[in-house]
Length: 456
View 1: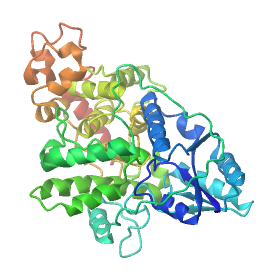
View 2: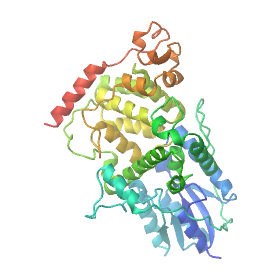
View 3: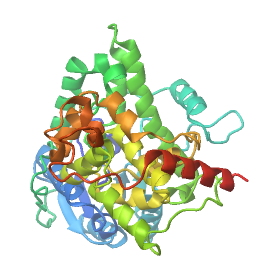
View 4: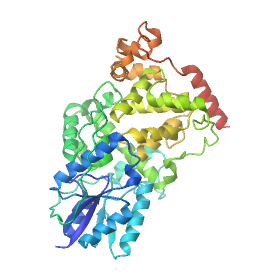
């Protein structure tokens, strides 16, 4: 049988894998993963541990046939293809700016030896760039995109492949990295993803519409990390959602909408790769920010935000959750992002880089466009005058203070919702919790003044 290569990237699973199915139809499959320093060197400890865990599980599901090599893909991939005499290297299409450039380089190197890079599918239900309006242009606003995305027709999960592996190629040892001390990283594997999805459907999906904003509850799917690494594909989730006929339709619809947001941001990045690290809209291009690189006070405030020392418990709980677990509840992501941009008046990329360095589910499109949504510089941006109040947000979405006390031990002695305003409690500062670094009303007024100046 001829040999072919399946180069795994953000698709670390065996099931529901169109590119693997195409490779299997060609002959014996060499499964390959390349430890690309451009990606691995910038990943935080938790995300690195999750990747290595997912690779170990993938290798087991592939009967130990996974070949791991470290180096530049434009060098490694053609070398491996030559070792097995593969005419084609199969991939799931990459959609990020770096991924697209990398694949173009790999394709060019393969072509010098009359080999091809063959892309089938992507990490999304509908590949970025495929949902267009009637004028053939991409959507800049989520609501019309989501309608067109649903109307486009969602593909069914791919069939399971009949695989025979190439086993004659040497692999570097599978890397093993433990998560940081104190971090209880959930298992990242195809089996764990499917088990979590089944559990969520059985126990929490019916209440998703009401519980998804509550960081004090286990009301979210917990699948963002699995979607990041591709241990499960959104096709699988959408197919199961479509098959439900119970009374939980409002929650199912909300869950599908959240998946659509992920697809929308990937589509935006596909059409506007410059928006990865620059404002999508130029309407606030003259906005003035405090620069931590030149302003010592701004640098101190940025450090306090990063370390969860702002004096606002809901914000600090989120930032400490990020540092200790590599994850943060989405509602809290919005509040902490708003605090950095609209209370501390620091440009959003400073926060986006911190999130990408620590989030186990760090996804460039969702993370950076989510930051711009909060900052008022992105697609479908929140109104520039919306400044999340970190006190009322905490009292609304963590009404008993349980989330705060879980991650801010200095407030363990403060009962109930008083944990959100320790300055009003006699026990609020007995264990060394810091006082607020800014006053909410003053910071909000300054933010609005800066926005008004930028808008002319």
